[in-house]
Image (tube, rainbow, N blue to C red):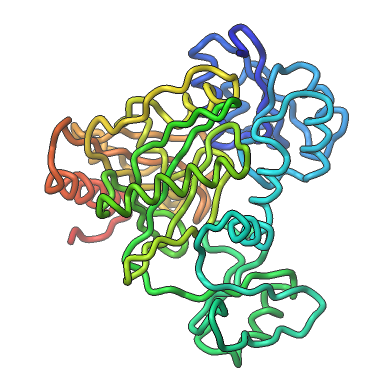
Length: 389
């Protein structure tokens, strides 16, 4: 076990890191954050903020030497930097898990090798003329989505294609880089699972969350998800299988498509806490961030149980007109709402600035879960100046 007052290291300084720092400091740990932004949300609450690029060897060495364990706030840290930290100190999760999640091609191959179902796909590689997929089992059909293998998130780096005639132009429009061509399956809904796994393989799974997106960015998450008991159990089992195949240590998010035919397909994995797990801050027996702390430090994992129905709605920079703060009166006047702001210095469209959790009462039924989701949506509409539905 790594126990207080040990110093923990964090690569990345965004809002996910901020919550990790707060959880760690509450338990008596010190935290060193490494992030190039001098005003990073996590750096603002850490004991030390090393302002440095993620490929700064001197800063990486200082982090590894000063900290009992180093974890990552997001997966797109250069692989060489991760390897440097791992060679010099303790990195959790490990290099393999973080680098697989950096590249959709590697991620798809890993999931296939683990026997985990995904939507039909094929690689579209840089420097080659993209060829339409062949007809046959396992090949993607159109309409399809072309996604860059690296650095695509929140709907970025994607192009939707109705037919193969537009494949070459779409590939060129994405810079001609390595891509994944994936069949656009008919969706019933999207769900996600947060799983925590300790160094010895012990695991805890948070309640399955149901997710709704706007313009490719997560908009609203509700728990419990509207999912049959067998599918819910399958989602939990698959998330555990992913973590086991990665020999994972930390908190891992697994996102799923639920098809109109009732099939469960993994969309992608995130080797860190996840936006869809923010509900755990107010309506779960343990937050995903405390669980992350427990996992990377080798502590006992806490049971992860929903304590009440909950809905989370994201607050993007679009809600900050002319750089002024929104009018929070409606949110703060709702007794079931919990406002979370991330302390970001500047708002811009699409940037995650905070979220609101709307929490029901323990023991409420599915109708009450629908009600808290309606309240969350209504609060967001009030902030956005949109009419209530």
